[in-house]
Image (tube, rainbow, N blue to C red; front, side, top):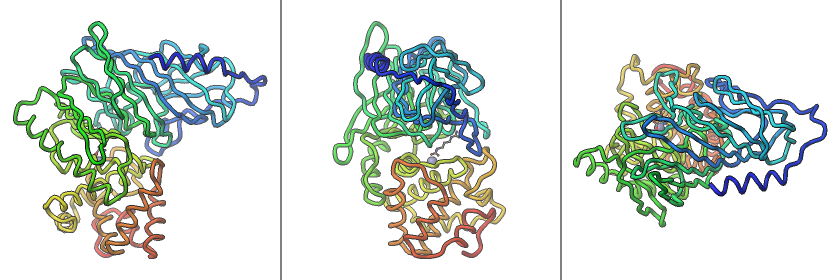
Length: 461
Ligand code: ARG
Ligand code: ZN
């Protein structure tokens, strides 16, 4: 990690210690998300992370070094990062050793002098320990999840601090470089483009670089025994695929067949929503079905089994809706899942299956007692409800109902404007309602009250 040391040295030279530290105050230890109030931290804006991790397979332990480059947004006497279940060995801020303490998911760092608002600074954290998955309110697991041959690494909604110190909030996107060291012969796949793969002694370091800003929950560093290859998609887009070698010949063939459709799906969604937002794409197909879900890791979805085509379309759609246009707060999860489900249906129609309206009608036939109707789509109050069928299905139905109400041309314009205006940012349900009303020229609050904010089966709208 030559880059790490170069950056540390140059920033040490550039360091300016303010003379009066009295007005400097601690950055907030959380951002008050309604579901995960400790997630993220105040007082700075993370710009880039250089992540180096050495994963010891025998002990399932990892040793990491993370260099965060950030800009202070207030005069800081201390600031926090999120880190779960791992022990910090040292911290340097602008190259100088800094005090630190850990409590729960909070790593508090107190540099020897304050950090002035507007200044760029670096924090270098050395840490390690046994990777333990994070357990969510709905009892699903995420983070660094050991598998028989490596680790399945996924972060939504709070798994990334399980393997690296990070400002764990969708509201602070940053670029990332990952140097993942695994035993020789293993494959490590992170986000972005593969820069190099260097074998030294019995270990191989896979260096990946994601140059487009990314929400922390979309980071991956999945590793294990994979068949790994690079191909190209539309416009020469690099597509990196990894398929677990543990699958038998039938599953291998099924994986190849479904992954071969990624290029066409990307082309179709690019035409519908606007250009694909990232410089690379691909899939990680792990044999880890005990995890129970797939995740749209940026530019590189994680699948816990060989996915069907609907799931591949769903995770690719998230690259626009979720990854580029990102929720700013977790109760707005339908902005990710409702949109990806609608897009999944739309791809199904394109591929010759049922139309989106067929899907709507099929689900609309479910009785009022069905679990798809509750809780309400937007304004969730319980973090255990994040990934319920209402978020996905009723969320997608709300969009289809909107399409019928405003007409297909206006609806398409709404989707395109939502992407064009929200690209690389964070958004809210209120933003979407305002945009839909602006583009359609209709007053839609009764419609959205019915479809988004009211539990139960809508009867008229
Ligand atoms: N966003 C994923 C999807 O596309 C689901 C992630 C579920 N995460 C979890 N921790 N349960 O459907
Ligand atoms: Zn999804």
